[in-house]
Image (cartoon, rainbow, N blue to C red; front, side):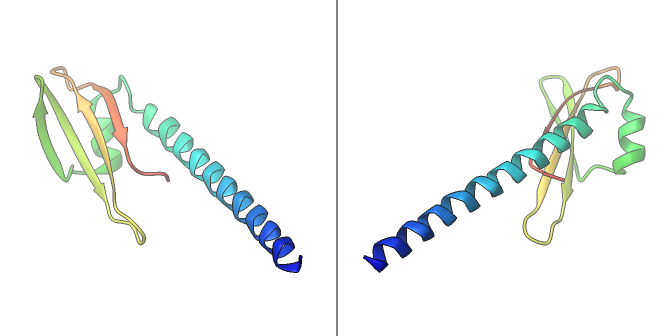
Length: 98
């Protein structure tokens, strides 16, 4: 009986911990998305003055993509910004959370 009770408590704690971590990750991802959205429809110079020189510059579908690699202590992430032919930021994709 004691083992079942202990297993139930452990399972409850595990489920709660996972949901708390998931919630924190979602909050950080939302914060990242909100921050990067401030660069949309702005000149490339704003992006360059904030992040510096991109790690890579790619050309996809007649648009330029600037890739910024951020080295982390636990994992590395990438921020990719799509630039149109007028040097305006028109999109982004990020694997960073903060």
